[in-house]
Image (cartoon, rainbow, N blue to C red; front, top):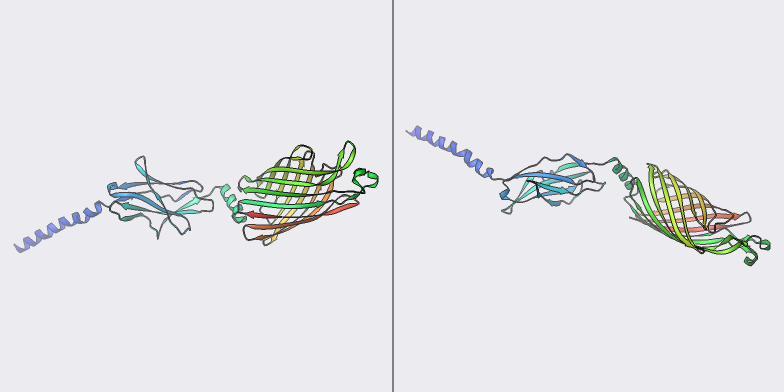
Amino acid sequence: MRTAALCLALALAAAARPALAQSPAADVPTIEHAPLAAANAREPIVLRFGVRHLERVARLAVRWRPGGAAAWRTAVAVRDSGAWRVDLPAQPITARAVDYYVVLELVDGSTRASFASAESPHRVVLRPEESDERELIELTRNRGRRLELTGGGEYTDFGSAPNEGGARCGAASGARCPDHWYTLWGEVRYRFYRRVRSVAVRVERLDGQTTRTTFEGPRTRDVGLVAATASVEFRLVDIVSLHLLGTIGANEETVQVGGGVRLDVGTGLPAVVSLGFQGITSYGLTASAWMRWETARDTPLGAGIELTSQPGANAQWGLRLLAEGGRHFGRHLTVLARVGYGARQQDAGGFTGGGAVRLAF
């Protein structure tokens, strides 16, 4: 009898054990989730979930962060066609991955890590497009800066040529023919680093004296110009850019329009060669060639030559030889200086001097 009773007790205990172990676990909420291994960069990441024992769940939250970031952010799932969905925002091109883990917040106030964890999150690798890769390379090369604000001024003097018998600029001008002017300007440029590399708007004010051709012959005249120029920079290939310019303004005579083109060879390299041509009606033409380089750290340098009939659409062209130097003070501030010498006549010449300050963000 004692043996039979012992066997019966063991049988009852064995029958009850699975029920006791299964009962609490059967009500524990769980999720069904197929994690992503990779996603397209600059596109939202969509995560979908199925939830078991939804009646015990207050909300489903995804804790996420860009790869390498310290702080976690929270995105709460919403219902979507019978499933639960979380949309993580598109990331900047500098992000290479997104880490996340999933937490269930239960109705009793407790939380339960349901997929991965803060200590061991799941990582989604972001796949950049080819254009994104080029943008990131150029953005890194430019120290993460996109917006540039530049202001500057320049004084140009081609000298005062002798006016023998008033033949060069009229008897009223006296013994000399002045040929000088100053320019003040400001520019805003935004860099996209895409097929359209950048766009810019420049405004300028010019005032001075030069020799103009009139129906009475060459005469000394006060000249001026207030103008705005818009430019668009296109990437032809990785190291070649084409700038197209359009200008509208007014001088002492009437409204003036113009345009121009510039080709940069070596964009993104330590040395860049620039060839440009620009013209404005009743104001003149300018052709230029520049070489700029930054082989010394934080010290941009340049040398150029300019052939111009500005600022009075002069019958005689002037030639300027120019040099530039500057200094980067940190990531945001650059100071530039320019000097040069120019002449329009063999018997007269003068100096150029100017500078600019640029803020970049």
